[in-house]
Image (tube, rainbow, N blue to C red; front, side, top):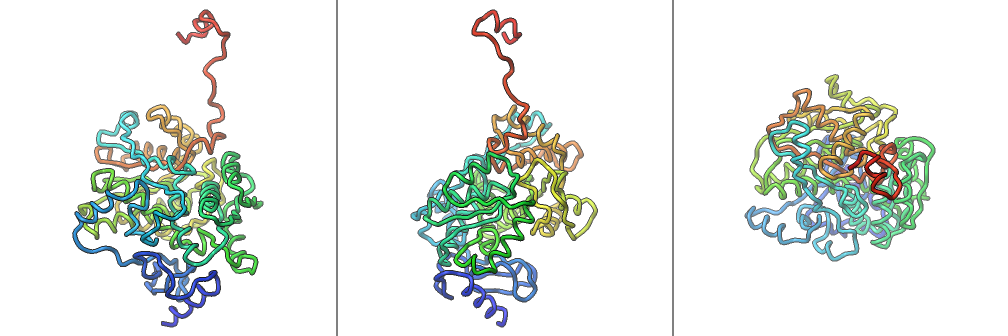
Length: 436
């Protein structure tokens, strides 16, 4: 009860017009510590007052006939709000001004499967089809509803690029001010996309971990009054958006669990929440319970989780990022230890690939399936290839690989790609070029 009181006081001090008991976030009932299980009232807090463990949303989920729930979901809008009964959002969320992300394509990647020697089914969950062309639109959409509930007026974040754009766009649509913070040396495509929505875009000298530390300081300062940092003080709600990837994959597979899924790791939150989503579907009876394996993918130049996994460690030691996969360049991933637990529990693995392998994988996916992935997608495809070659991923099973963003945001990675030839406008020149 003491912890409950502390949590309530913290929420009231950092929110806008929120008061205890006034929050409508649908089936969400409380926040629960992932380490010690202590419960807290819904509010803009992210760390346990008892043990400093991370908080996540606890629910009173629907009970009753799974068939009826499936039918209700399938009758819903073609975006993440079809799953509103399973998310921390009000029931009328679909009618509010938001970007309506989700329900992106699950691509049957038969050509890629042939190249990789996959004999089972291989799918690419292509989240580049979201409004700002990355999966971050999902998590921001949930965070916006929490920001509304807690009376915030400014949306903010620390970002490696994609999140900055998602926050800027969502804030513009929902009527919030936005001010987002990024490392000063991000890919130009991501900088432009984050800045075009009219909010403030601030470059911080240093890497993402430096940016994140700065944002943590700003939250505790009067300058941050009325600010909702989607991946800090709104993080428990924000993270729940990644569950919708699990929901969609299973629904698109005909309400079945995949056998294997390969997920990129930045902070690790996406991987942990996809696992949470799969477990919820099992508990609700929406899918048949069966074993599945979760594999994590990192770039070699920022691979603290894969390094710990391969060494058999439970502690993830921070690294200084040095990779072209800047959207994954988080050297001190908050959810790293939980990723280790999930990979080991499910019988999966955490692997990494070099920058050269990332570029080769981007081109492979583009050549085989017509999907231009950003560097994070190159990481997942490259890791999938490496896992198959090393006998760690079963090529006979149903496998889903995530592409979390659009390659137009990371053109620098494939900057050597261009015209096959430059010719005069004549058939003779075309023949002479050897292209006929």
